[in-house]
Length: 124
Image (cartoon, helix red, strand yellow):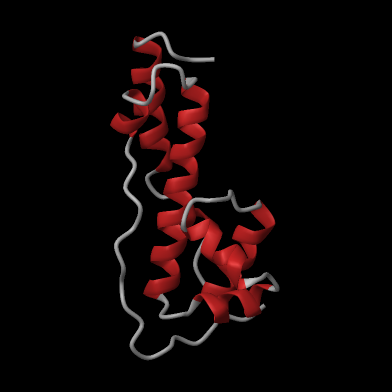
């Protein structure tokens, strides 16, 4: 798969905002593991959107290049669904970025979130 050519006028939008502290302060009845999974979805969503916009590529063009529906891209970028690793690999190839670019910041956020959750006795 070859990289997609950037489109003119591609702009940057605000990403979703969820941080480790938000996981730690999540509803007391929500298990920490569920909150951590939500943190993973949001981090992936922000990173996918950021890399796509940095490349100047529309959701539609990325979808066509990767053989997925535009709604799939939209739902991933809105943290409504987790991308499959094969989908991330297709994004990586189409945008000509390393797969690891979608994981930036994730490990630090997870460590902090898990530690806060354990301190509050909300893991499991």
